[in-house]
Length: 496
Ligand code: FAD
Ligand code: NAP
Image (cartoon, rainbow, N blue to C red; front, side, top):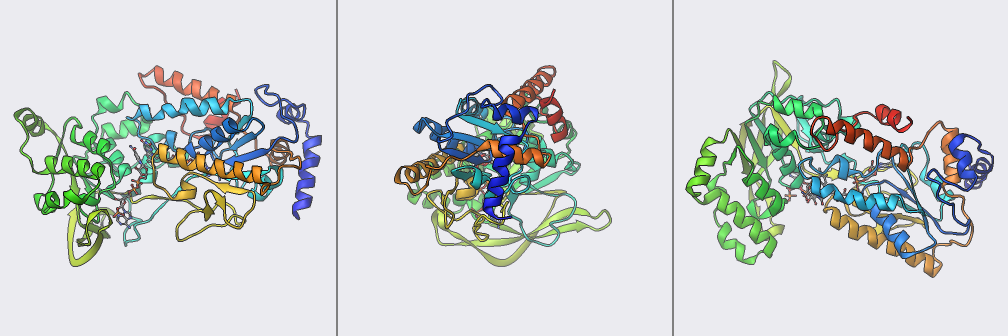
């Protein structure tokens, strides 16, 4: 169907739709009784309601009094990795949800959950209905380790493992087997440390968090006593940060078990590294090499669980227990470093080492995926190619967050890159590069299209019903919330 025909059919539906929620939109009132805005106001659609989506919306709404923003989200619930990534024992990080909620409740912002862009509605259709579309749909895939045996039972991506303990609906069935003694985590970033901490945290700590009940129960029965966090490079190249390392060092009922030889030459090399890296490495050196005080020695002696960094090791193969067709260990290539500092490269020595383990979690990074063939996508970098958030060769199309930069950066980094995208978009409006002179139907035509396709969006007040239900269920068992685990249940509660 040509673009014109699509727009025309959308407009027709826009004026003729008469179901309950559609007709309210057509009467100029949206779901919370917000007044709709002049047809001439610039209409911006944002795809994805993680930090990138919300910070882009916040900046646009704050900086311009006329812009109207609609956020479309695949799941019935907002907030992306703040809900499904951030570790359950880091509740303070989730306070950003309060700011996002203010944005969602702003009179010029609307949230439409349960809309899978690329499937329920195409990016082209959104572009026809809005003056600008910002893609902020994050990085929902993961980098694969690409070694033989990675499909064996007992091998998981950190993305799925984190999704499992955080209640991501499509990870509900993961049910990882935690009956082994040793787990190997590949990668030494903050996600790896989150996973290690959750595997080793005492039940009494986890039970007060919003970790899902099935994960809590499985972890309570876990036999894992030793977690090895394996990196291909050395101590000066770890990707985690000091706060997360300190949490490991202080984790109750655990003790570190490092290999002193891995730290040869590290003290001398420290003089040339930036200060945050220096402090991080000093903590690692202290943990690995210093004899602790009496109290700490006593604590470590009593600890029933062990965590350790293993350096200069790359995965070569997952070893199988052929009788049970599951993971029995991992073969690691031993590396040496070429170059120095943070940029040093791992080079194979030709030697290998086998480590027995029943669980391997690959935490070597997330990866954005293309969602719509009409959107340019750089497969080698796994990002949407862009210039300061302007999607290359696609007028009116923008991107922010991990989709724009690749899957690194904390929420504050994502906030800054999303503000930058919002600034680019506004510059284009001001300069006329982005034409906002012609009225666009915005959500009204899209909601009509969705209704025709049998897709019922979940609005923000529906999410608030889910939120109340989860909080109520959590309170009953001493947790901040008990998350609903299936899309069906979320929709049921939303539509009560
Ligand atoms: P996301 O948060 O992934 O949001 C993308 C959104 O788009 C999601 O809601 C998704 O459902 C939606 N979406 C996907 N596809 C579609 C589609 N087709 N249609 C519509 N919607 C779609 N940072 C910190 O500062 N502190 C932490 O403690 C911390 N912990 C983390 C733990 C983990 C495990 C991970 C992976 C990251 C963590 N981060 C943390 C980093 C932080 O989560 C990211 O910087 C941030 O979430 C990136 O935001 P985003 O909006 O680009 O992506
Ligand atoms: P990350 O920080 O990029 O770490 C990825 C790790 O995987 C690195 O150790 C990397 O080693 C390794 N790796 C990558 N490719 C590999 C390969 N082919 N073989 C072996 N190892 C490989 O990614 P992340 O841990 O997924 O975290 C993503 C972002 O979220 C980060 O910015 C992180 O800080 C943030 N986050 C923050 C928090 C928090 O603030 N508490 C919590 C979780 C996540 P090399 O360095 O050698 O490439």
